[in-house]
Length: 264
Image (cartoon, rainbow, N blue to C red; front, side, top):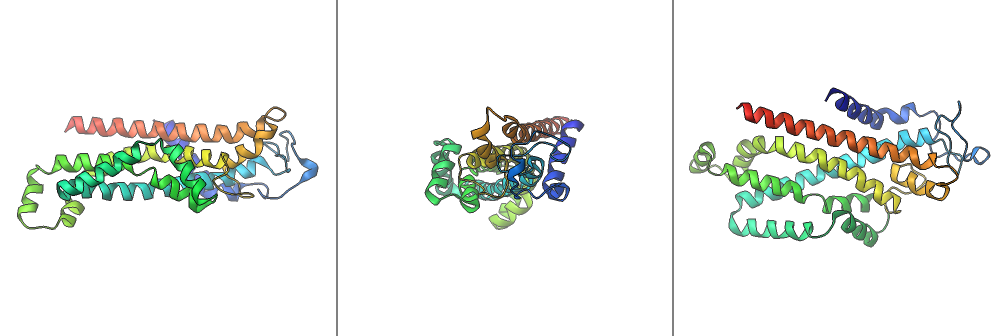
């Protein structure tokens, strides 16, 4: 558990402070040193344009993790509000929200994101919009399910009888019960957002050159995959290890919450 959390902290630190640690300008083209092997000057080597791979990885961490964090937070807010509307708004609101959720869940989220990004055009704004639109539904289902289970609790019934507004009830009685479960969902969706950003970047719909991002680094390196495979290995490892660490941290958080609930 501690090692997993330490690894997550390392990636967060790289996203925050990585650009300060980068030894070179990640966008500086240096043709004479193109496709250089790892050395003292180029710790992880250089890409086809002579740019330092280590520097691009460190700068790319901020793009990949930062955008994933933004996407997952926006999805959390939208999904939680939708779930609370379904739980507190009556049968009609519940039916509308759940049918909308089912409609979105009927499409594979990555394919839907690719279609949306393709329609809107490549760019960071399109990337954020596409992944947010396809990533709020799981939060809504969790918030709605827990919200419905709370409706018969004594303190909620008393608040309703006292004439408190649904907003006040949701703020003081629903959200504290929702947050632990939503945080578990959020860790998984954060990891999925990193994969989605990398996938869309690899397909050319994400962060645009010359700015480094792990998915776009994979896109740039694909042509030289056989001659210099390290170009693809480094950003690929960054994505795999980061996503694995976040998923393991989410599993540990879920187990801790389950144990705490069992003790109660």
